Image (tube, rainbow over the protein chains, first blue to last red):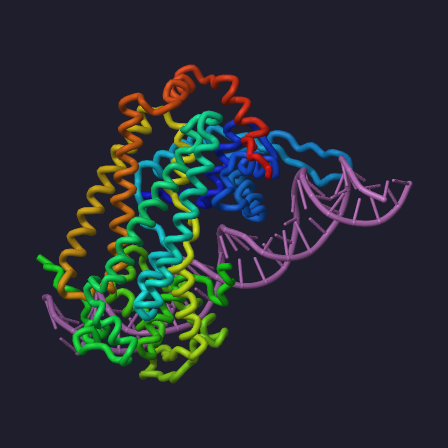
Length: 219
Length: 219
DNA sequence: CTCCGATTGTTCGTCCACGAGTATACGCAC
DNA sequence: GTGCGTATACTCGTGGACGAACAATCGGAG
């Protein structure tokens, strides 16, 4: 599944959705996205925007509608969405909504090397993360509250989601931190010992080497 | 913040962490990562691996330790981590653990164009997503349970996190779906009307156009 | 003993993302 | 009116990610 999109960059989805509303030239699309707030979490990469538009054009998902020139300004090409483009937008939306996919996460990567940090430092850093998360959460919550009433909630549904995920993350990190602080986290002793003596127990060493392939009952 | 890493690809972090354990040649690193299970969520891109290793070498974070050739096989270069590399690993781990950063999410992108789908179809797709999420969650839970006891939990902490996030997502989607199904979701009427008549209310149209800059009380 | 598929190990070429650069026009201060 | 900061609008070059190809060896099956 997850059919190869002719233009894969997610920015293309945003472009399609703005141009679906009415024809625009690329810079205008950027403005629209910005005016929308779509760029709050992900500033618009102008370089990519033009590449993406060109590719959408090449694949027939957009078409040049008009190409005007004002004075000595660079030429502006206005694009409209094609039927194919509209179909792609719908299909893509369906896929994204219906199909979860594991995506790389920086924090996950960090956790996967957490062991290289001594436990006390790790705890300290996690505390810092929680503070930042809390701040972000209340910031987002305030922003959402500010928009509520003004804007139909459907336009903010992604922000609700983001907020929920941040809250969940904060809560999970709190749990982890709690276990570390209280020393209840299983394997704490080994972790600490490794950082104090520089040596790991034989069984962990064995694990690190070779056959980590833990008994998957290969029927 | 988020200092520009000399080698930014997260695969480099994984590479550093394997080579920190003992010197290896690139293919071996890949094997190690795989044997670990780090590739479950993100299959190793061999093309990138060699690029990343070369770049780490170029920037002095790895160094060629030995370059043997067995028979007519292609030359194998064994790399060891340098002090600078070790420092980078630590520093990077610190950053990743301590600093949350909003990352692009496919689902979020999907939500941001949810409005292009008629509400009933959206609900159907969300139901599908929930099923897939539930399946994934129980799969992951089983895998974790299988490893528990065999492997120190610290080695699985990222998987715990992933699991928690998936559960949170499922739960949030359930909430959304509930509101849509019951018609309680605010703006439902407009949403449905738009798809049935093809017209939006004047105020939404006004929002879509221009000054969406919702009254941020500028200081 | 030889054929074939899997495993070991690496290189190469292409595509694409995006930062930085370019160039004009507008508006406001003095 | 003239200087300069800022908005408009686009182009281009570089570097990096990764798919796909390549090449040798190994381990059975017949």
